[in-house]
Length: 301
Ligand SMILES: Nc1ncnc2c1ncn2[C@@H]1O[C@H](COP(=O)(O)OP(=O)(O)O)[C@@H](O)[C@H]1O
Ligand SMILES: [Mg+2]
Image 1 (cartoon, protein in one colour):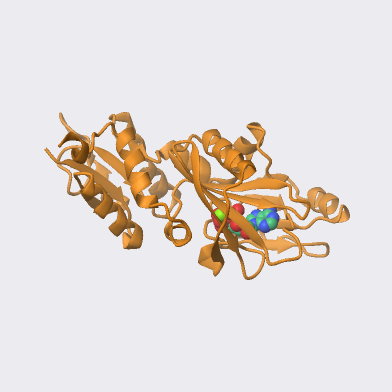
Image 2: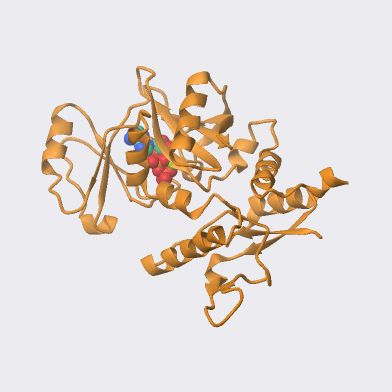
């Protein structure tokens, strides 16, 4: 019987098409499913999880997107993923990994706790940030203010001596402040390292137009050598956040010292695919199927 995979996404696009083709080549069928259409129906006996297109549970779940929304909505979407895992379905990456990595404060805490270099960071509720700003500015540093759950370089702000913080309300009541790390005199750049099953497999250099090097903000992707230092840091970061696969952002200061700044649990790989000869989708699907304990039909035949 053909194995059936759910790909959670509201925007299948390039990644969705690639995943479907790779699953098909491995003898598995797949459906795109929106987490917004899933729910619980707790009523009597039988399966209480409702996933459109799946009468029975899927054989595995590949998470390509979790929609935004109110706190209740997002918790509900993550609950669907938690419930699937609870019922024994492989969820790639699982809700716990997604929760930890979407929350930049938790990511910074876990990276630091695992001894991985990451810039000095403050996550503040109602504490007064004045002292931190004064200390950092008088030591000659600048700060980056980030939305706690931000992505794709959206909402980042760089502030220096003489600047004040925007209202905390703009950040949903939590300040995430991080020391700005200058990457030197050239255009700002960082490395995106892709890790699958604990092993760094590919990297690219992203060169931004300003100081932000996200592809979504116009950065260009360049081929790069996966140096030992980058590889080891990215693998340690992926382990610290317990990811099946991860996109790890690493920058180096003007003295060459590396810092892990982010670990993405739903990383895109379209940009990376342009600068590597490896078939990223194929590698992901291979690893996904081994996590789901599905023997690809191509191997059975
Ligand atoms: N502390 C920092 N110092 C210098 N540049 C930074 C710092 N934090 C982020 N950046 C730049 O902004 C980009 C986006 O930051 P990141 O924390 O990865 O947020 P996002 O989730 O939006 O990608 C990074 O890739 C890097 O180019
Ligand atoms: Mg990033």
